[in-house]
Image 1 (cartoon, rainbow, N blue to C red):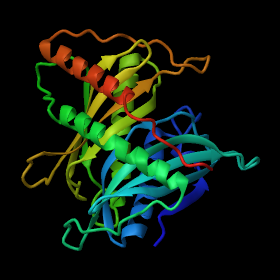
Image 2: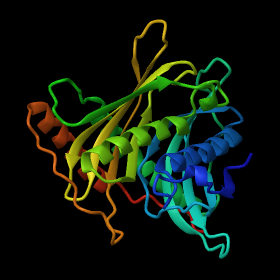
Image 3: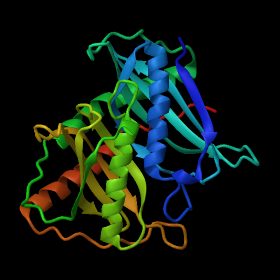
Length: 314
């Protein structure tokens, strides 16, 4: 069994943003999920589902034509779960000098042929670096559970007045993963596309993702399901737009939508100087608006207290 894997490929023009300056954040999230899946499936020897993706900070843009490396490694195992650290680096093919674009931890669960969780081989650190990464993973578990609890408790009703955008479409056969459902990377791309459209509409200029986190997968999206992706602005900082995104799905025959995925994401508008520019400020008009803004601010503070996410030495 191997506890790590590296995928290497070129960033294609079809992956770029509308201005052609960088690769779409949703595409990067797809790469992260694919690398993580390959690592988890290789370690467990089973089909795996994405249960959680946390704290994806887009610290450096990836350019079309860049050489990309997505490296995934096991850093902790539970009974049937695996925490996988994925680092995405990019380089010009002319220089081959890689720099870190983003990194995050994903949690995968191994499943049997009946889609029931099954035990996975227990992973043990072999080096001092393995030990460092494993300790960091364990330190973040309880804090992550608290953020999960707070986020799941929030209610979204028609009493809110903040901007909301919903996309609705069918999950296509081209979205399928190896288990016959829409794979996690595709769902994350849907999330990013919806949030990017809402934040651009609010700002009036093109926006880009700088953070996506707390992505919890509650149930799979089946091919042929009707999918609803709803983004809502919760809070605006001086230069940032904070949104909650929820994905629901239903079989077209019964139209009973169920929550499948949820997360928080942050977008900014990059000015001519290459820095985040000021954004229009959101007015909190109702109790629900104020409650959800308070929730967003609480989550921001909790994430500041998370232990730093370690990266492997290259």
